[in-house]
Length: 166
Image 1 (cartoon, rainbow, N blue to C red):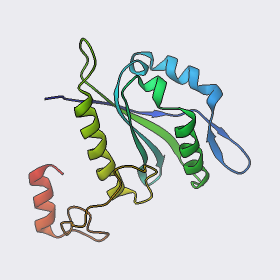
Image 2: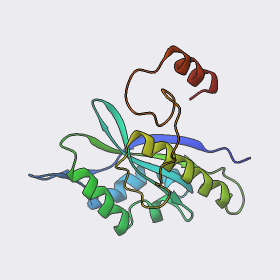
Image 3: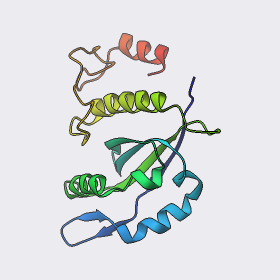
């Protein structure tokens, strides 16, 4: 069984313009040098925005090469910039879910399964998630537990969530 380790949140370097905040490409080398050991790892990552009401997931990705090679590719930077233009306030952050270290490649099947799970979980928190693949929402839910909309969950739902560690 592959056990992933969570690291983060790490603040993404930004440039604050007159109209919006963007990811500062010039600050990325320093960003990666500060987390050098993570930059070389593989696994999944979550790009999110931290604001006063918590952290909102924006994009889930997987790195089958290294995080440094895949997290800020032009295609993904464009997604992050578009997202940041819609936030008046907030700080972009990254979480890394590290695949188990060892000799050879990590279990890429497990990395893919984790990415699918994270996308489904993140889209429950943010229906505007920027991912294209894997965002088809399931057509079922559990009232007060999973995909049931807003509102205070019942005592039974809270107990059920606690029982399953959700």
